[in-house]
Amino acid sequence: MSKAVLKDIDSLEFGDLVEVAWLDASENTGQFQGEGYDTPVQSVGYFLGVKGRKTKHVVIAKEIINNKHYHYNVIPIGMIQQILIQRKNALKPKLRRVFKKFALKTMPRLRKKDGWCYGNRKKMVKDHVERLD
Image 1 (cartoon, rainbow, N blue to C red):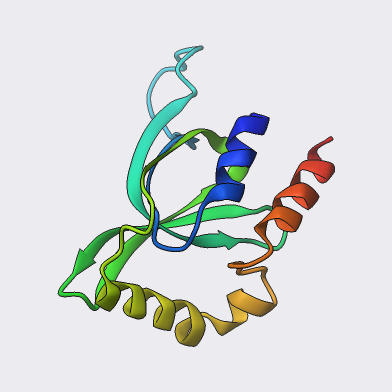
Image 2: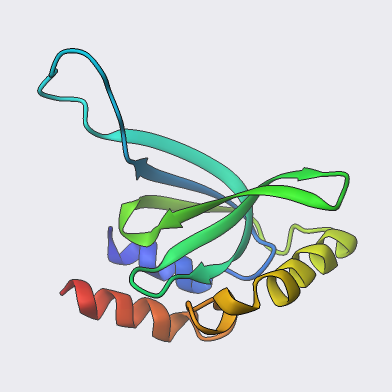
């Protein structure tokens, strides 16, 4: 993870359309291949926030179904290689309300106890970097 990635995360706002390049865990069966542990992934979605108690994660909504349900990725910050902001404030007003409602009502435990974050991402990301140093 680079300082540029941390700067990009710090600049994100709820509803920004982002493309995240990151490394996922991998699993394989059969013979040991010696290389190929890295599993690069490109995820595109709407930024919802940063969460996590032990390690911080970027949360993005990927698929929106009938303006009510969605699939989301929770990506460990330490695995992110690059974040590209495709469009600022990209969520339509109705979807913005749906996602805010999700974050505030259905995940209150994450928002408080586990570090769900909208406002002070600078401090959260800075604390995460200090733990890595």
